[in-house]
Amino acid sequence: MSLPEVSFEAARSLVATACLALDEEDFCSFLACCSDDFHYTIRVHSPELRRDMTWLEHDLAGMQGLLEGVRDHLRRQGRLLRHLGASVLVEASAQHTVLDTSVLVLHTDLEGVTRVWAAGRYRDAVAAGADGARLLNRRVQLHTRDLGTGSHVPI
Amino acid sequence: MSARNEAGWRAAPALPRDYWVPGSVYTQPDIFALERREIFGRTWRFACHESELPEPGDYRCVEHAGLDLFLLRGPDGLVRCFFNACSHRGARLLSAPSGNARKITCFYHLWTYDSRGRCIGIPRAEGYSRAGIGKSQLGLREVRCESHLGLLFINLDDEAPPLEDYLDGALAPFDSILRSGPLEVFHFSRTVLDCNWKAWHETNMDLYHEYMHVVLRQTQVNAMPMEDRALQVFANGHGGSGRLRAAYDGYRGFKGRGSDEVPPLPGTTATEFLFSILFSGSAVLSRGTVMRIDTVSPQGPDRTVLEMRGLGIKGEPQEHRRIRERHHNQYWGPFGRNVPEDMLAAESCARSFSGTTANHQLIAREEALTGQDDAILRNFYREWSRHTGVEWDCDAGARS
Ligand code: FES
Ligand SMILES: [Fe+2]
Image (cartoon, rainbow over all chains, first blue to last red; front, side, top):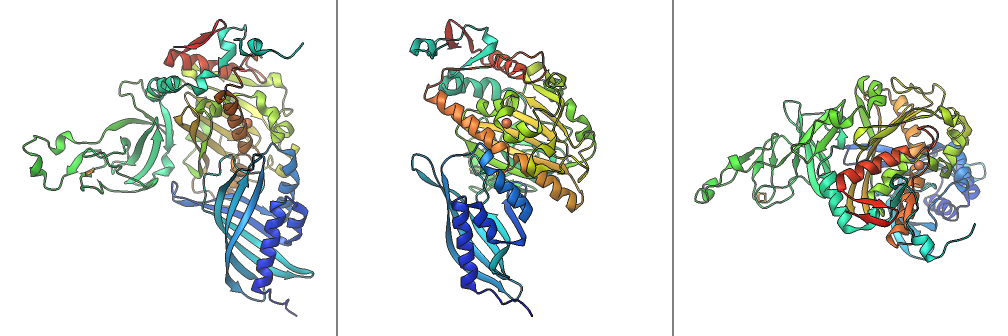
């Protein structure tokens, strides 16, 4: 029996839940949104090199290791907020539902000053798992290339 | 032992001049103007790698000393560098960071230049005949450009000594990598940092700050005896280190990196860490499987453009490249465990100096060119003073 298709609404809701978890640095909840086969990449096009670059790539175990280590590091202080724009349905099948969602990441510093830090787009593939929808794949296509002092936490 | 009062805090340290640096060198506009003229106007500076313009007609725009320049590979295969400004009314000729152009036509009044910078076309040129102006006098400003094993350097000083004399062997640790065959830039990022250019460059010269980085505490500090490290200082302010080692298994996320998951760059090993510091603001580093080149372009005393490149082997299998990218990103990418921390450190010190909360910094560690000796920093600042004429001693701050 094939697993049920994930609806657009359910997929969008999972994307939002995953973002809130990352915003809160609740990495357990974020990882709970991901399937065992999860794959994550951040891609950026370089007009200087005239090619695409990969700035981060992990499977679920890699992502787990990355996130578990975050708290040990010297990091920019303040907090990030991922603001989701509209989502469009790219593909829907019994295997997965694929959404494109524009995202702005805002940084608020310890003085309370907020600035746009990054702009880009998520391409998320969401699949049905035994206990609900899970992220199978997230590809972040970043438009912003100057990320200032960078980030220890993915987008 | 006690905290200091204002006089104690502000007093120049009672140390030889080599052992400290006054904060004014990071903040004073007149010192910055001197640096522009006497350092960035006269010394060789890494511009880009030859793989960024592989084909005839390929160009690459760069910023240097407040100037817009571009490098262009001619049909003869040679790369030349020019000011990116039209001889007519100064319009910027090339606006994309890179591209291909067999000839360059200015968008404004359509003056045209060839790959040697010669003006080869002026619409209705007869209109200039009364003024006695012709194409032959209207070429672009060419800037000296020389290659060291594929690394392209530029120099605004037409009279400067050749690049190889200037390097004085400082890139020798990278010879076998650079001679082994073509490399390719796969990572490029440009970041504007709120700090003086030297504050960034210091993060590459200062080994003592290994303690700041969790990954270096866990993979590098104890990977070999401190006294077995061999730091080097060269003429013209360059420095470097051969043969540091890393034990990558010490950091959870890096397990397996030291093994043979991808061939190391030729002439090095997966666990070797090499770096060469080039005066004024470039650094070449390799971590066994991957190479990085940094370059700074200062825009003001407290604003610096930092360009970072990651390099692998040109034409290598996709699965190797992917691992090399991962290795690069683990330390040096914008989401990495190393470079973002260095950026925070550079901006943190800059903040203290720009508000004059801090007065000077100490570069007084002496470890006979082992361990975490500050010798590379001292060598840098000696050369810096030689160019700028700015000196200091314990009776006064900086003076030029
Ligand atoms: S400014 Fe370039 S042709 Fe006039
Ligand atoms: Fe560092």
